[in-house]
Image (cartoon, rainbow, N blue to C red; front, side, top):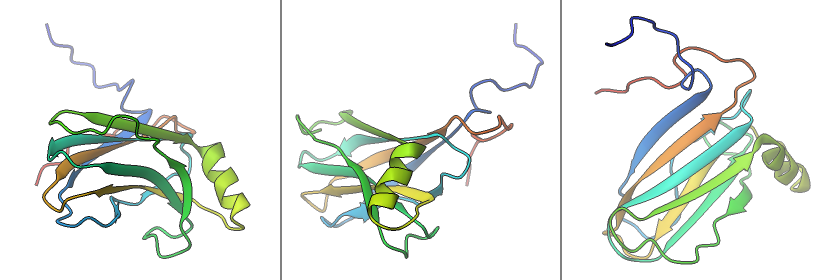
Length: 148
């Protein structure tokens, strides 16, 4: 029997969003800038849907919400085995402390983050998912349906 309760346990403690990754290019692509204010953890996943070429994958921080400030690379995935088949996945995560430390070392501040992905051929595609977790306060609907 389905419950009538509307309380949220998991989705009041994390914001989860996925992005279609079809760059039609081989240059590094910023997936989408998100605000890390009040979150303690950021994680990103690359999920291969088309292609077999090599992938680079990193998390970059910036002081500007659109990434127009100075980029600070927080962490880069040391890709051992390339995700060369549909369904292959890479994961990368950073803490708020790692973001702050990387920004301080670069002589700046950073509140916004993005995953940066590149592929070796312009026909490769994937999905990149973000999770921002452990907000200072649990809030209903941090993760919500997105329907066009």
